[in-house]
Length: 429
Image (tube, rainbow, N blue to C red; front, side, top):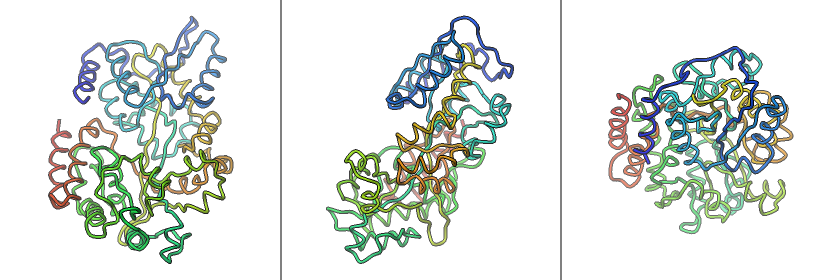
């Protein structure tokens, strides 16, 4: 997969680049018949918002325009974008994981939209600043966020109550969480906490929150040097090493991150990070009150000598350099990501938005998502994985380091130094 992706990034860089890096601020809307080709995630096409409604609005505004929506899976969305743009074929709007922003910018896959965003002062001021920053590369904006998420913690109240603990009280610190988990667990049937330990991004991403809590950083601000092997990174990794080997609240089993919800639902965990049990509860016909009786949720804790920190991910919409009309493409993504258009999608899918104007719909969104207010609060403390082109190749040395340390095959410092050396080689290219 990596060589496949690299091939088409190389192709994109070597073929003629039509308009790459240029921004047309004067609207140039074609008057002839035009079809816009739009690639998005398939699950989002199962309801009216946000893409189907954006298609209807744009086609009404411009009777000569037809929007062709194609829904694909995560990997297929990325691969088709790289293949189509690399071959200089028309593609007008793409959905992308925010971690691809730097890669797509450097590879001239996307056009910058800075001038268009800043020209619309109402739009520009409405975007929460950290989401504006995470859609930018080298001073240029390349996308508008369509939705985000945020990691919170949750717990099964029944187990805390049986252990003589307050089931309504969230742990204020990770140290308190560990002590509670040790008291409330019953291994191997019920573990105290969850950490994936897989060979994938989930393992790395769930280590970032403790890293940020200790005040650490993943990379330098200019994305040119690894900083995750700092004392903060070592302490964050030591926390998980201890949870697995000393406190024994995390089983030495490689779980996919998606399995956490099933483990919680089957009452196999006391506490879970990246907690989201509401979807299964809703499918089972639970009321919000029944959900709150069974589960507690909160913003993630901090270390005693640290600060509250969590992480977010999510998707943006961008304009490929092969778009037939960047102005029409921008109008589409502006409509699709607008608060009034996308709030129905957030309510139905229990997603989060990145616009300040969503605050007026808090009651409506919380009605369909009992964890909404907790998640909205957690956004105040959120951080992001790097969105530079080297981040995806960096994942393998990082998750390998975490696995080595938790399996006691290397100290946290040794494992992270090895990963940092590999990351710095990538960053130096």
